[in-house]
Image (tube, one colour):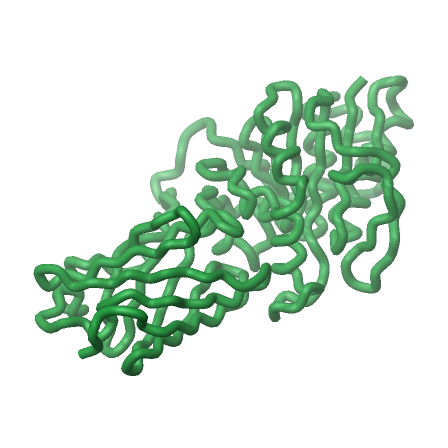
Length: 344
């Protein structure tokens, strides 16, 4: 018996969850005592409110990460832009900050569990720090954000990375489920369901095997998106005391709440250096560069989510303003005040 657990969380996208649910349920018509399909949550049985229009669906079970089989994680539905609680970034962030992340970490650590995601479901796992170094896909709008979490974005309809199978856009839930039927039960069962639905699976399933094309592009490290500090043409080696030197108490307003961060910036031997301190964590700036009157750098943060953020700030005397950005997520406003060190 193969167990299929379709995970629901508040704000989930209906088609992301229900399409694979129905595919697996349809497969039971052609098999006997082979599949058991249920809707679950990280908290246990409850009614779960979907995204747009707030349709309530009842989940009858609690997610069991040790149960051999398949776990399907959907994405979210709502406005793409904005910081409101109903926006897709906020919903995904809330799911990543819930008990779901710990349960999915346990599931991904098992050889007898296949974790499948649809659309933004891969972002839920990635924002929880679970997909670093794993090949995956998500909705095309979120591919930059997926890369910012340390995952390896692959532009395919379905990506098979062993015990992790991810799907792209909303309707890819059909393709992911049909592919898993073929992989686990064989092509005849998958074809029977395709014929029942009058649907043919789309796209090539990407796997890290076989010959690689000569033109294959290696996914760029996020830090490459900001020029190197050794590029003299960008004035990275400052010949004067940087206007940004000193310690700054800053506040970053993100879709998942406010972050209080201490920035420490200095210019040593003409090279700008910096660290960000949040709680007990001190993180060094990656490739800080002075671009005219703005300072830009990358930062790998782990709280409240695991992301590679791009910062760009300006200093006006003792005040700092700017933004922090990660892919699909709306730009987060940064404001701060210098608490030590002299302005130039």
